[in-house]
Image (cartoon, rainbow, N blue to C red; front, side, top):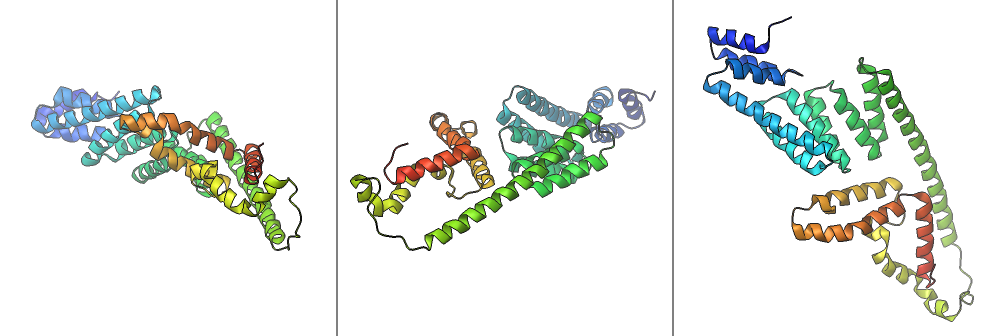
Length: 317
């Protein structure tokens, strides 16, 4: 067995103490050797440089452990902040490997509260620093799927399978299933888009036909408002789920998801630091959640759209 890091550190101190922090820093930047770097500095380091490096390594370890603990307890925003603190330290020290690890961990925290754009930024940077960091590769692929960027996700999934030679058969089967699901979603969205375009074409053709004059079919109250349907619809849109999410009535499923995720990053109660703002959004956030739940599911959205059309002509459903 090779000698322990602490024994090597002691021997280096006997030769020349400035060698100790150089040795410890090399360990710290090596995957899986952060603990050995601390041991080397504690056993062999005596100079100011060694003590400063030990303080830095322990500060990073504290913040990382704090982030890991918060993540396990589902306190994802706290985990994000702790990982960010650790990242700011390692960036000053130039430790690319540890930077990649922390960014990948922070991406996991972001994904847990649907911050997929942030997760993509972190995993991309992690892969720039560590090109074959497979965990980051997989997390970026999954974040891309959630935002509907399927081609980028597929590229990452396939690269993961091609380059990760140590993957287990169970993990490989899981990734292949995710790839299959992405292809199914692509086909489903293509079919939905085709159906939507046909419906829009029929609507335009119908709108171009002359409308015969006739008595209102729902009686005098509806007849009095028949010429105001467009204005009523405009007014009622101020209270619709579409308005809450900031999307148009013909928004696609992906546009609705993207709008909701952007809102969540800004107004979700967990994102509020001001107590009054947090209290306000704890009370009001559920209606945004209801809007998303309704519009993101095809059947409930059809029913809701039908209700809006009836509401526009003064009928209750």
